[in-house]
Image 1: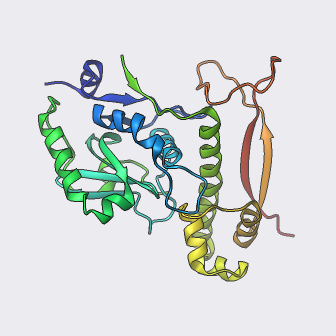
Image 2: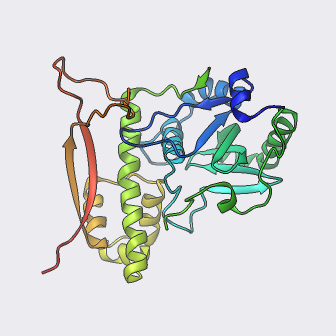
Length: 164
Length: 123
């Protein structure tokens, strides 16, 4: 069994080296699966937004990464749910065009297993399937127990989720 | 130790960062004014003269916000929108963003753009 850092060293997961703006510091961590890394290199650059906006899905993910790692509130509006619990400790982060599936092995540490176009996922009802893939990957990862934070309280998995 | 990075160009990163910064500043101002004065998106929409759904989409990021709309939103929230170009301060040990490509061959550091909302000074 291994810690997140040890798994990172081995390449079972990869730490997302988010490039933060000057004078921002790292307050949360994101790790990604090799599958997500491959998707981000091959599929993500080809995705276009389905909305009348300038930001591409790639830019949305970059923005989300910066906000998350910098420890900023994910949203200032409590009616918006940027982080959703699907079940069994599986969570997904949302941008306007993407759904990013993973879990929290410890607070403020998110492991991304997979991601995809939000409309495609909704239209093809893929939430449950992706959640199942997260559970499978997580269960086979030689990560120290407990492998994930149980429960559906977002405040238990991430600090400063909302603006106070 | 291998790590993961998004393959995003410096200019696209800068664009994403600025768009996010502006939108989040507006979201934050609304959150603060909601607590302070009970202002809602409907109030803002009524003052600007658009449907509430337009404000909702723009603050959510589902619709672009024009520069003029930034000014309108700021004013409706009781703020003034401010804009300045700033050269980043290079601090030893701090993040040095490689997303900022030098635009000159001199020793001058690259420009940074900062949006800000300032609360209006009441008389």
